[in-house]
Image 1 (cartoon, rainbow, N blue to C red):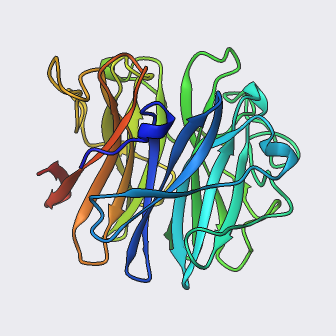
Image 2: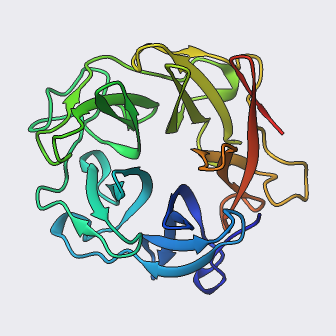
Length: 298
C-alpha cells in the first residue's frame, strides 16, 4: 500500500481506518488551498484506497481547518474524533458521527474537549491544547487519548480523558485525567510523543505512538497499560518501526501511527511517511503480530 492525494499535491497524513458494511474507510488529513482538512477514502481490501469525499468545514471552530482524525465504530455508528487546526494553544478535539462512513452529523457542542477550562482544570504540564485524538473502549469507558504541549510549547506530551459509553461524547462527557500518560524521555523520542493510537488486547491497552517531531525522524513506538492510564514502554533502545533507507518513500520518517484490528482478525499498523522533509506525504500499512505480549512488524 502506498496512498496519497495526487490532486492535492501528494499530501496524505494522519490515517484512521475502520470497517463498515463491507468497506474499509480511511480518514486522513489533506491540504487544499493551504487549508488542512479531512479526506474520506474507501477500499474493499484495506490496502487500495480511493478518495471519495472530503469532510465539510461548517462550524465556527473549524474555520482555520481540521485534521488528524481518530475513529471507532460503536453499535453500527462511526464516531470521528478530530482536531481543530491553526489555533495554537487553543486547538481542541471535536466529535462527529456517521451511519454510512461519508456523511457526518457534527456535535453541536464542538469542540468537546481540551485540557483547559471549561473542559477540565488545566494541568501545570499542559498548555491547554489538544490534538491527535484516538479512542478505545476499555471496560465501561471510552478512553480519549490526545497530544498537547508543555507551557513553553516545546515538548509534545500525551494525555487521556474518559467518558461513559452512553454519554453521547459531547462537551461535558469527558473527564480529563490530571497526570501525564506519556512524555518523551528516550533519545529517539527527542522532544515529542504524539499521535497516540490505542488498541485493547487481553485486558490491556496497547498505545502505539509517534516519537520525535515530523522528519526528525519520527518513528513509531508502543507502550502497554493494565488500566489505560499508567503505561510501560515496550521499545526502549529503538523504535518498533523506523524510517526507511535513503531513497525510499519514507526515508525521512515512519510516523503518526494508527492501529487497526480488522474484522478478519489481522492487525494493521497504518502510518505516514515522507522522503523530502515533509514536502509530500504518503500513507502505508504494515501487519502487526503479537509474540506473547510483544507486537512485532511482519
